[in-house]
Length: 217
Ligand SMILES: C[S@@+](CC[C@H](N)C(=O)[O-])C[C@H]1O[C@@H](n2cnc3c(N)ncnc32)[C@H](O)[C@@H]1O
Image (cartoon, rainbow, N blue to C red; front, side):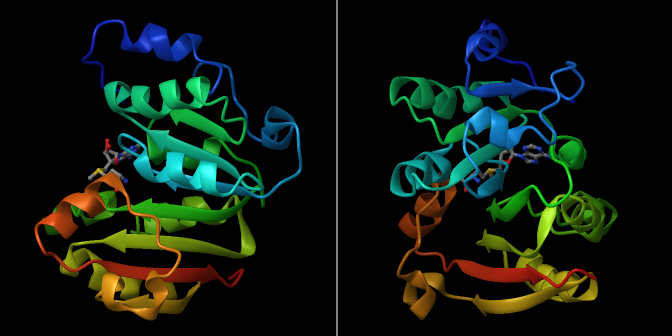
């Protein structure tokens, strides 16, 4: 389901050449991403980008990577969408849609890495299946993530983090590394701070991070 709040936002997104509407708009990019980017560079995907600080910074820092971000709220997606046009950021594409259908946007082995940054923790047990690291989502990711491809996950929520540390290995992902205090860890070196991460840093919260590698099983 798409969230419509800001008048004119959808029209603006539809006119933006960096934004993909689909697959239900018959504009399905699955299997065509390298054609869309006009190169064969690796594809990295962020799920739930919000106002897109992370993906905008990453696209600028790593021009040799193709970045795609999905977001279901149109008014926040306007930020990276406007940035991509203004900056002529050819290695950045955005999907206006719901990650529930993420596997419909990509074909087998099309994505090298997935970033999940500060997703909603869904703390009630009956809502666990909505967690972006729940096995229902992991099974979708496996349909298009390369073998040895990685999930990079950050959260401030300890319960969601511990859940994910158990959930990934049970569903074919090896934990390559993890920390409960990213900003004081050896993994901090190349960390790119997201919009929500900055909020939590300002409040003195610790950030948890893990990297999971898909074993192909
Ligand atoms: C808490 S915000 C974090 C935003 C950003 N990743 C950051 O770290 O600053 C979570 C974002 O994920 C988006 N989101 C949550 N579930 C989603 C889904 N199923 N499909 C697409 N976007 C989703 C929300 O709309 C929201 O913008």
